[in-house]
Length: 452
Ligand SMILES: Cc1cc2nc3c(=O)[nH]c(=O)nc-3n(C[C@H](O)[C@H](O)[C@H](O)COP(=O)(O)OP(=O)(O)OC[C@H]3O[C@@H](n4cnc5c(N)ncnc54)[C@H](O)[C@@H]3O)c2cc1C
Image (cartoon, rainbow, N blue to C red; front, side, top):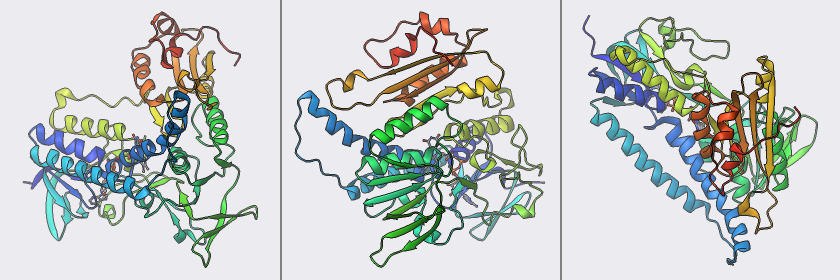
């Protein structure tokens, strides 16, 4: 049967754009449908605008610390509307770049909501298109629990477009998005509480990292409330929010921000017209080739709920494009040693196994840990400490994990990830000459193991 397209991609986010562009570059006839914004979550309501807001928040401490270096500034004044307008302008520019990337690589762009009518047919804006293969790359969506008053709460989608910086913000959640936004609001001057129902935030990160960040955020004056959850939210006559916790306590806020997880975006996608199956959390089930239970339908990125990060969606998109249209270049995605950062203030950077994961995997673990006050702070009042930690296999000397809390941790860990990927041992770290004076050199000068 002749199809309109070789590949029809639903969703022009990180994974979809990558797959579409490269498939077209390999000579395939490709279309992509996008219902909301080109570039998807990352560009519009994720990584990019978030990092811009983190930069914005960071200036507060820069101004403060500059005094130790002889600078005197009048009272710093922050204008939220300017930050948001400039951020929007930059995102518009990026949207244009994504449009050009697609169009210039020969991809047909359909701007509208796509719905599957059958395993080979998609409907967009009332028009039907057929394709040999359909790639579902529809991403995820924030989830706010069904509590009374949930309509008064916002998610990350709305936070990027708030008209004004709220005076008192209650951030709910213990994942990286909650921690990052708490840092943004706090850094920009809002009274910020981070509320999480578990013992300690950032489950899955190294225990030392989690504790260190807890201490640093507390030292900065952020209100951390663990083992706490919201029962209901009531709007007051003055527009403020009265939040009742499950333990009966009441908190007052001007904004309640939920970052308690993301669901796959499957709304009105028509997957019921196919044999596609779902896992117990509702994510699309795929095999190692991103093949769903329906032979003509593949899925990648956040919608499969594997590792919900942009570089992973990009790698999956690339793998699909190559496997379908350039099989001689196909390489499976390697999910080991994916480095990540949390752009909290201070940042977290991490790659490889945590101490807890290494022990659980049966490694005889040797730990190296350093906590120090960075040189940049020595002329300032700021008492912030940086943490660096190496998790090493005592038998093989292989470095299993690198973890850091401190300025530019994400930047530093990217380089270390290459070393770990290449199988670096602790001896390789020791024999590497440091860059002096930097904080990063501490990673190659930790000599004495700490008691684990
Ligand atoms: C606040 C926040 C911060 C983040 N920060 C980071 C970070 O710092 N680093 C990092 O690596 N990752 C980060 N992420 C995660 C990252 O954004 C995602 O992992 C990534 O965007 C997933 O790409 P994707 O292609 O799967 O989906 P998306 O990028 O979500 O793209 C899906 C696209 O599909 C479109 N779509 C959905 N349904 C349809 C339909 N039926 N028809 C047509 N179009 C449709 C959507 O409009 C969307 O544009 C962050 C996410 C959030 C929410």
